[in-house]
Length: 67
Image (cartoon, rainbow, N blue to C red; front, side, top):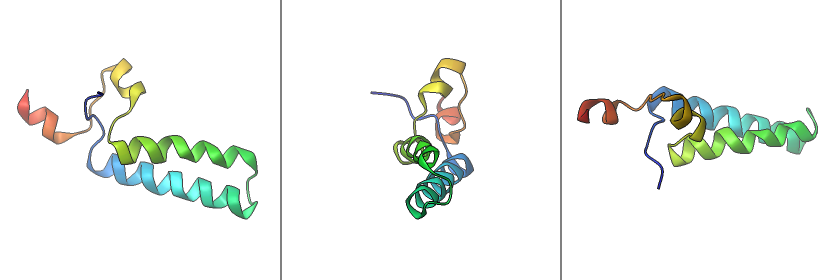
């Protein structure tokens, strides 16, 4: 499928921000726009980001060692 291109700290931050936005939306603090948190949550959990693929960015050290 997609190559792994999200690593370490990037992954943790994506998951944390995604969860924070979803919780804020559920609590009614920020409204419907909080559901955008699904995107960073999914990319953090799946360890792949389509935008990174298009831009040629890779924060995963495992892939850097193989090259």
